[in-house]
Amino acid sequence: MTRYKQGIEKFREIKGEGAEKSLERLESLSPDLARYIMEFAFNDIYRRPGLDLRSREIATIAALTALGNAPQQIKVHTVCALNVGVTKEEVMEVILQMALYAGFPAAINAMQAVNEAFDEFDKRNPGAVKPANDGIDIQRKKAISA
Image 1 (cartoon, rainbow, N blue to C red):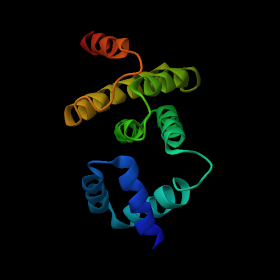
Image 2 (image 1 turned 30 degrees about the vertical axis):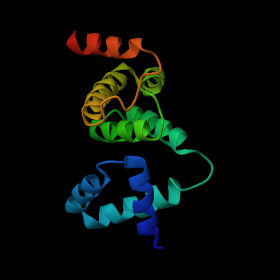
Image 3 (image 1 turned 90 degrees about the horizontal axis):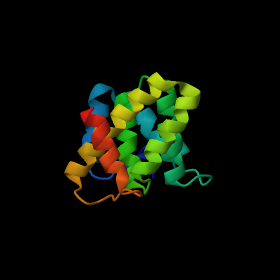
C-alpha cells in the first residue's frame, strides 16, 4: 500500500464520519497539498508507534492553540480528538494550559473554536460523548450565552 493510501486510512480512522468530505475539500483546494498532508502528516507521523492517537490529538490542539491563528484546524482536530477518546474536559483543560504559554487571546480564540466544534459534534452524534465532568456543558453554555 502506498504512503498516500496508508495516510488516508489513518485519516479516516481519526476523522471518522466526514473524512471523505474533508478529503474532497482539501483536494479541491490543492491536490498536491492533500497528498503531502496524507503522506507526511497522517502516514509518516500519525502512524508512528511512540504516541497513541489521544496523545497526538492533545498535542495537536495545544500546538494549534499556541499558533493563535488556526480556528478551523482547531475545530477539525477537536472532532478528531473526541473521535479517538479525548473528553471535552480534557480539550478545554489543554486550552486553559496553553493560556499560560500562548497568551489569553490565543486561548480565547481556541475556546471559541472548540465550543463550536462541540456543538457541531453533538448535533451529528447525539449522546456519543459524555463529558468527564457533568458540569462542563453547563459551564460551556453559560460562557457562550454571556
